Each structure stands twice: as C-alpha cells, then as structure tokens.
Image 1: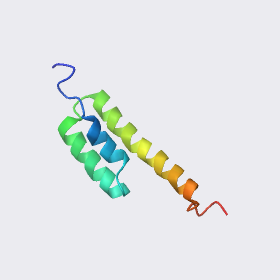
Image 2: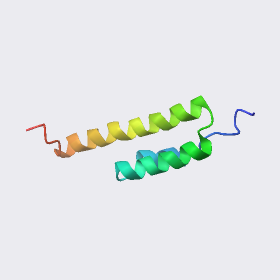
Image 3: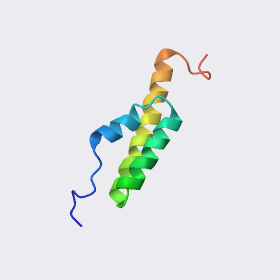
Length: 71
C-alpha cells in the first residue's frame, strides 16, 4: 500500500473542526473514518481534528462569555 493512497483531504478535517454542532462533527468524522481510517495514522488524525474542534469551541465560548461556570 502506498503512503499517499489513504491520505485524508484537509478540507474534510477543516469541516470537522468548523462544524456547528458536536453531532455534525461526529457524523462527518464517522464518514471520514469509514472511507479513510484504515491506518493508525489516519485514525489519529481524525481524533486530533475532533479534539481541535473541542478546544476551539471552548475557547470561543470563553471569549464570548457564554461559559456558565465563569461568573
């Protein structure tokens, strides 16, 4: 198997990172996993994209003042 045979297009990962809801992100990530997740590296890349989304969304919430724990 060639190294570039199962690379994940960057626009798919960006769509996961920029998805409006967690459900939407997980649906897209599941599709990416089924079509491109055959290697450990690709599975790790998908997990990192979801983690990056979580971090960026938390940062946005804190910046907006929407964090309920912060009073």
